[in-house]
Length: 282
Length: 284
Image (cartoon, rainbow over all chains, first blue to last red; front, side, top):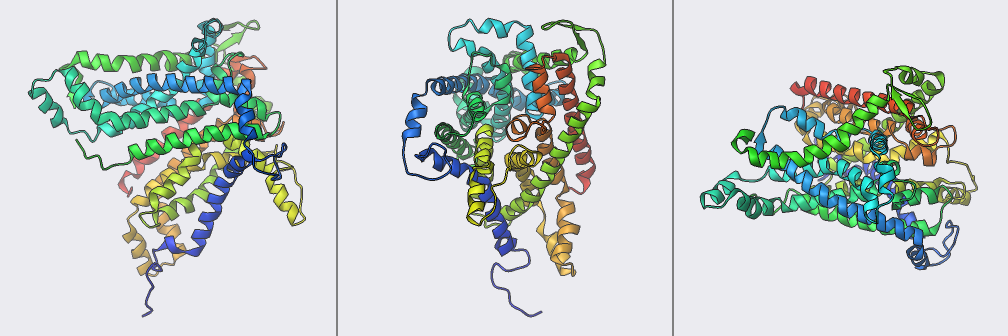
């Protein structure tokens, strides 16, 4: 038993086991290989897209000049942009209420607030379809000028995004030192001045992280958009869905790659901001 | 924390907008859906509330029961496969050098942020008959095989899409696991395998249960994955719901099916709450 162990080969150093490393590599390969092939083949000259024939940017030019895709992308980005703003405001208000106040039935309120996160997306999608149709908003919004004809989708996106924002912002607020607020009021600042000059600057990383989260959620959503969009409005995921049913094309690869880049960049920024960080508590 | 009565004006200003939105655009639509699930269809566009249970009873027709049963087992198999692949990943991340952990976690979560549709599309390109996998198999003289448009493809698609949901709760519990328990077990003569099954696994059970629920619920309600990867006979309950609201145009029946899905979801969440409260004593 007097065998000496090399560093890293102790009984609990599972991180150094070869079998675990191989398994790890295999699973990560399976996770990323499809995405990387998709990106790689967006630069392929071959129309069918299986065999590599040569490097080109043509697919991007074609996707960019495709009027349908352009409209879908513009719609998706506008919806994401507008719903992010509304969802961030609503979400941070909810976060502030839950952080600052005790009130009757608070636990139940929190439970209901997290319902949009937990119930199956399709249930939320069909319930909104039913609601908008019966309230006449489905037929009514068609006549609006852009971007107001997207109002149903925006309302739906805000409804499923803002509880997420509330969670992110609230977890940031937990680290706030309330003595700062008291100090500010002692020094003669009003409720509003304290909020604007003390609490909001502290919330900022949480606000940005929450906003980016809402933005990606909205940009990625297919199911709820599919049910709440009228026959005339197309968003990017809905457009890709109809294209994919007709087959695989490098143009879809190019457009998808663009969307992947947008979401990945947004996510990485959000995560950097959310990390339990160096920015000092209060 | 203040009582709301300390500053009712601020309280109501902050409380009202979000609550209003949730009430009007989430709770009322769900209530309407619930109401409609007890209605009769009286014409192409109109339904009338009659308090009937016919829509729910119809869901237990052999046709729909088969689909419900199939959705349950496809989701169960997908969840089990997620657990099998996610556990080693979560375990490996926990025991990786500290400086690697954030990067590895990011790598697991990142695909989750990429559009569901794009990821499914990427899978189609890999698995279709003229796809990359068949191309590689062709080099060793195999295939081509038709791998898409069947139940297996749906299961693979669900695992691919929902695996990150499983890794995160597992990571959270394994990370909190007190390693001296493992050392104690090994010191007392337990083998690595025994230690894993008798110590590690029971202690990480809360994470496993959470992960199972987090994966099983979206799998059961999935509609995009079976629609894209499944064949004509691979439809799941989500596709039936979609059909009722689009082509088949029987909204009351679609509402009833949606609510059955919601009941299962609530049941799963209640089960999780129950297990969490019971395991409080031994939770690490």
